[in-house]
Length: 258
Image (spheres, rainbow, N blue to C red):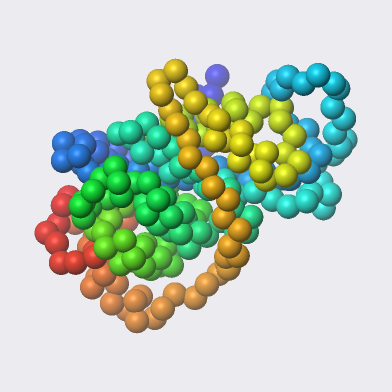
């Protein structure tokens, strides 16, 4: 049984879960969007074995290794899960998993779908992990979220899950688990096969998944704008008690929501 915790647990872990619960309850009560985001494990394109069962009329022969050098490319699957609507939005990227990639995906699906579900709203709540392309400590993540808020004309509340708690992020079991099942045993010969399988993901509780391909190129290790870094409090409003995990990306002057 998986009962041994690896890594130091934060002394503020329970406080953060209470904060997340409070924010979710408030946003639900106001019919405001509550989104959970994350990037799924990268997948190789090519004639590679994938675990699981896949029904076919003929035997399928795949490579006897999973060397990346034999791949035709790599997919970066990024997801957005709307908690209230039980709807997923998956982007299949072909470049790098960066904060710019994440924000572009949110902007695309907000413009194409979500703005019609939540018309006239000026607030959005996003739950995400504390590492990777959503790293809670990185200035570049906050800088890109600020660009997103300006682009969407939206105040964005960000709440990060504490270290070693990513499994509690709703997208993991509400969306990714079902997408993974839909991918079982499939050979990802090309990205369009992945898109079709992802789009066909569904559950008895009514989950729907909208999928798109993002072929834009993204740079890693981009420098932070020094003006933004030095004046971050002019753009970001931090929670007084847990500023390392909770903050508002301001589109306009607002009262603190925490």
